[in-house]
Length: 193
Image 1 (cartoon, helix red, strand yellow):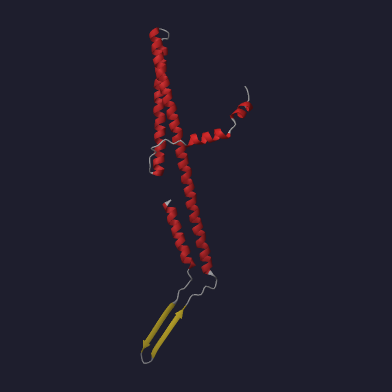
Image 2 (cartoon, rainbow, N blue to C red):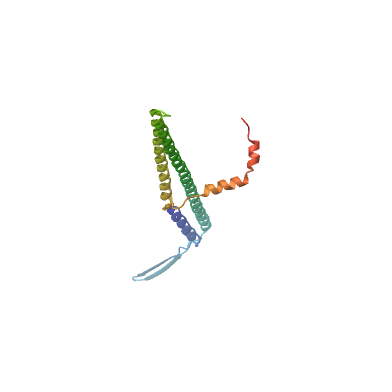
């Protein structure tokens, strides 16, 4: 972004310079003292017969427009990247929350399996299977938290800031969508299988 801004400033400076008239006067003085004293003065001035100044102005203004468009393009790219990263964070948080709920459910399932094993209702292999499911849920939770950490790291890379608060914009969008949709009409139009 800084390079695009610098390029724009350089283009603006060239445009300001192109607006100035082509004015290259030259003055030459020559003097010689010998038997005959000689003195001459020469003045030369550049004339813009082919309207080079206007051509320079047009070219410089095109470079300024290009620089402005480059900055706008980079801002849009940055905004798109930022929106994508924020979406990744929101999704990763929701997925990590769901993985945490899965761990809680699996913990309750293991507790239930242990009580049923104590009562003799299930076998040792079924209890081990329940414990393996809990371990799998815990591993999945750690993986989801790693993905969340990566998404938050990407946000920090772009903005230089950490996200302290809970992002809730998808819920706002979903509520807006839900308000706009006639749920009853959609349910009636849903095909029955």
